Image (cartoon, rainbow, N blue to C red; front, side, top):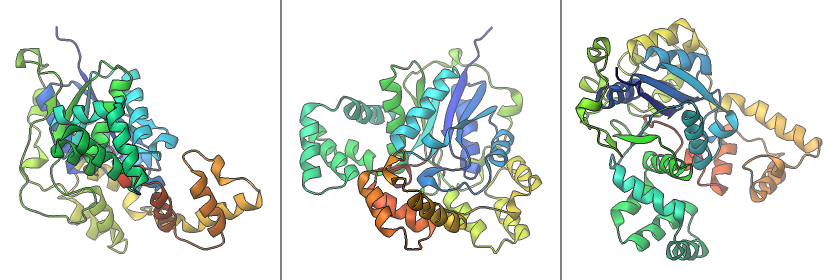
Length: 360
């Protein structure tokens, strides 16, 4: 009797779509995973934005799309830096006993990603000096890190990994595994379809890529996938994977015409997941960041009157706290407030790598 193999994914599913379905199916097909456990952000996601649909609707979509279990990432970590987001997700899945951690990457080259992660965890003295020099020259944190890595390794390809959102997040997952001396095996699947911020819904037929794993088990060590799952149609065969950003844009720009939106979403979201979305009635009441503008401005003013310093909040620097205090009487949209935060914190999840399997 074969032992049970459990794979883990860290994701936002904002919302769940064909790219996520593809990842789950490829993970099962190519690793023989019996179960897939997802650590998913709740009602707030990257950059501190509200998810377009509530966590229960998105959970149901994920379960209909192939996941076996969905657990919630605490909001403190779901909205935190890429490093904290990844560390929490890895710790949560490791405690649940997963054998594999699967994530997407633009590179698809696990060895290169692991090399980059090792440098960033160990921070050799020579690398650290180069990094500090670039910071003194006024470079942003990500740019300084990339330049230091290029000069330290003499490998432009390795440093280039640090400029792509999904690669960056993949490296953070690998860093978290290394810091924990984890026995969980990392597996990366090369990302297909639109870029993270792309808003187009259609493109030429994508190519398919096999995942890379840090262990190369033979077929005899793989657990057979159930016949039902083997017969599932893989979205990559027929669809271009639009990003979650594109899907959110589609929903936002259709004047809440749920029938028109549903028709357009049929080619972007697996049928079972779309049915779950429709049955929940969530398409009639999507949530967008600027819907919370008034609430956010009211809360900032309330905190000022209560004389509570903004710097006491997690992940909020003294510089940003000072700026918020000076500009609190200026009415700004939720999105503008987030952009203000990222201007001073370019390594927040939404700026560097926000999300989890990034067919986001």
